[in-house]
View 1 (cartoon, rainbow, N blue to C red):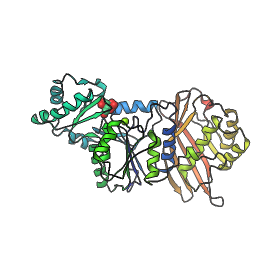
View 2 (spheres, protein in one colour; view 1 turned 180 degrees about the horizontal axis):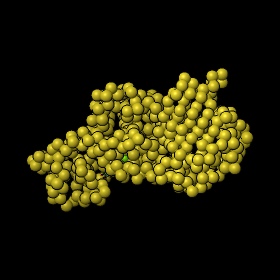
View 3 (cartoon, protein in one colour; view 1 turned 90 degrees about the vertical axis):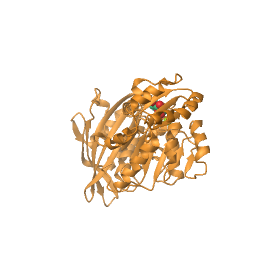
View 4 (cartoon, rainbow, N blue to C red; view 1 turned 135 degrees about the vertical axis):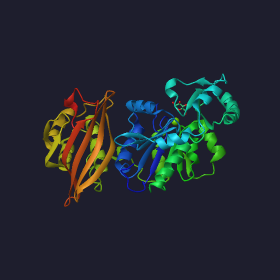
Length: 424
Ligand code: GLC
Ligand code: MG
């Protein structure tokens, strides 16, 4: 969050399971479309916030299976924890202290144990400020009528959240996805980083509170659970700033960006012209995203094995430009481009995908940018990742950016045994 000096252009708050992440799509088509859109057009001046019922550990495990971008802020365990995800992950202790007021986990466990219908969720889903169960809806409704009073008599103020027809969370009264986000927005405001553009995105019961944030736009993705739709019908149906998308999951989020006019809504994945992808305005983030999308198409054999594409790539980079491979080998960028010939179509049938994460750029002189990002490459279910730096220089006469230098190093834990098939 410190990287922004002033108000973010957009604060996008997304639930993960069945909202950003589509568990029914093994290709992650829309998530990858979202990733390219976010990194090309939003990352540098906007905030990405995840709001999930998962614990931090469980969210990180999801990130090992799905191509999730690094958020700026993760609100986990249904609002019970807030973490700022810069170079280091820093938990918000002030929020934890606030949640501890009028909360006593032992008393919650003791009183809930008197309801035999409540089946405790596994230990890994229990947190200091979240006691979770499985229960059928009809029992949940009955328990929600009496449990808050019982606990209040013992000095414990709780909020109860029921989701997906099975999950029942007992949380501190101030918590929940709405409580966590309200706290975060106040904190941002105190730091001069409030934004008039906030978009919240969800699909199920524990997301309902997000749509109660008065200044936010909201999208319920098309695959939303009926409990959220019912909540909307009863509580927010006259609010024009909350919509039901016609598209699923991440595609529904992209749809909302367009419908509320919150910024670019064409993913570079949808509009890439492999031959002329650099004819945009000078935009370092867009430039690197497009370069790697072309590279993915080349490796996947989705563009012809034609020299014109390689010539185009060469025209983007300086003949003197050097690429330092993560193995340490360095050669002119143009020679590496020649090496690409042998890899055309190599990723076909391997579900070969590339996504960039944390694309940030800064001027190092009036006509030179340094762009930093993590590049992730998926092939046959295995991910390899490199920290990448690219030096781009503006060629004034051409109104183009030239790639002057590329340097990569393996991210911790991702060193590749097969370094031959890693180029760029
Ligand atoms: C996630 C959590 C679970 C919680 C549910 C609903 O699935 O893992 O503990 O009950 O979200 O909030
Ligand atoms: Mg969900």
